[in-house]
Amino acid sequence: MNAGALAGLKVVDISTIVAGGMASSMLADHGADVLKIEDPRAGDPARTLNPLKDGISLWHRVSGRNKTALSLNLGKPEGAEILLRLVKDADILIENFRPGTLEKWGLGWDKLKAANPKLVLLRISGFGQDGPYSNRPGFGTVAEGLSGLAMRTGPANGAPALASLPLADNITGLFGAFAVMFAIYNRDHGNGRGQMIDISLYEPLFRILEDQVLSFDQLGRIPQRMGNRLPGAAPRGAFETSDGRWIAIAVSSEKTAQRLLIAVGGEGLANDPRFNTNAERFRNADALEAIIADWIGAREADDVLGIFERGDVVAIELFDIAQIFQDPHVLARGNIIDVEDPTLGNARVPGVVPKFSETPGEVRHLSRPLGSDNDEVYRATLGFTAEQISALRANGVI
Image (cartoon, rainbow, N blue to C red; front, side, top):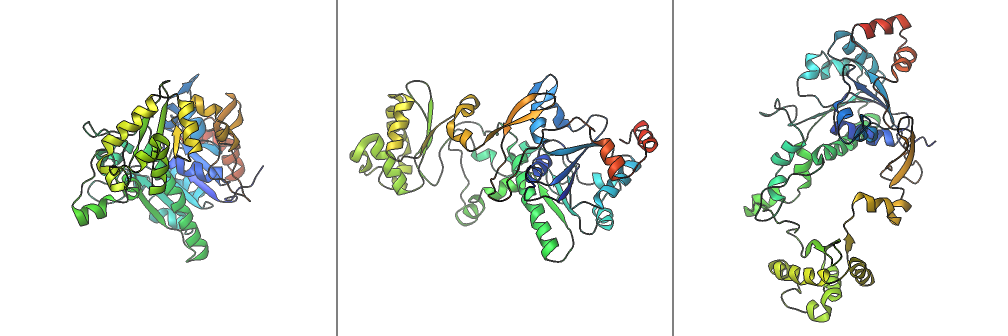
C-alpha cells in the first residue's frame, strides 16, 4: 500500500452532494486521511444519486472512496461540540452549506479557528459568502448561467445548452482541492496560521472562460453560441462516418490545419485561398466543414482514422463507455482499475489522477455504509465509552 503524497494530512469533510466531495476525494486519493461526516438521519444525499444497483448509488461508491464514514448531527449542540473536538486535530475542514448555516450551529469561522488556529476551512456555496446573491440556493446549473457558460454553449441557432454532468460542481471541487493546499503551504512555510477559503460554484467556470471579460471590456464582444466550433481556430467538429461512427477533429495551429487539409483533399485543398490561413478558414468554416463532412461521410471510421494517423492529424473517434472499457490506451494508462468491494464484489472504477512518480495515489476502498466507522472514531479517537456512544445514538446525535 502506498502512503501517497498527502499521507498524514487530516481532513474533515462535512459537505454534501458533489463539489466538496470531489475536493476531499482528490485529497483522499493521494493519501490524506479524510473523515466524511454525514447526518445520521439520512446520510449524504449523494447516496441516493443515480445510477443505483440494489439501492446502492454507484456514483457515491466512487465519490466516497478512500474516506472514513462517520455519522454526526451537526444541528444538535452535542454534535457541534464533537465537531469542534475533531477539528482540533485536523488540517482541513470542508463544507458547502448555505452561508450562515455553520454560524447557526455555533460553528462559524471565529469558533473554528479558536479551536484550531492552524485549521484551513474550505467554504463552497452557490454564490459565495457575501454579495447580494449569497443567501440564494445554488447548484451547478445556476453556476453555468451566471458564469456565462450556458449562453455561449449550444447550436448557433438553438437554445443555450446545459452540461449533462455536474460540471461546475466538479470543477469547483478541483479548485477547492488545490486551494486548500495553497493554504497549507502558506501555513507551513509562511505565517503558521490557517485561513478560510471562500469559493462559489460559478467563479471557477467564470475564471476558465479566459477570453470573455477582456474581450468585452476592450472590444465590446459578447460570445455567441457556435455549436462545436471555437472562436480561435477552425475547423473543429464531430463528423459521422459511413458506418455510423463519429470522428472529432480540431486544429490549433497552421501546421495542424495543413496536415488535416492535405489528408482530406491533398495539396489542392491545402492551397485553397479560402482555407490557407486561420482567419480565412474561420470565415469560410461552413464550406470547409461541408468538404470534411462529405469526405468522412464517404468512408468507414477505421479508414478515416488510419489516414489521419498516417498524416499526423489531430483526430479521435468519439467513444461511449463500452468502447472506453476496451480501449488499449485507457487500459494501459490504468484509467480503469479493479477494486474489491464488500457489496459489489469486484468493481471497476476510475483510476487515480494525476500520476506521481514517487508517491502514487491509490484507491484503497470504495465508499462505506453510513456511520460504519463510528465505533472506531468515537471510541478509539475521541475516547467515548460504550455507554456514552449509546446515549449519543439514542439522542439522535450520531
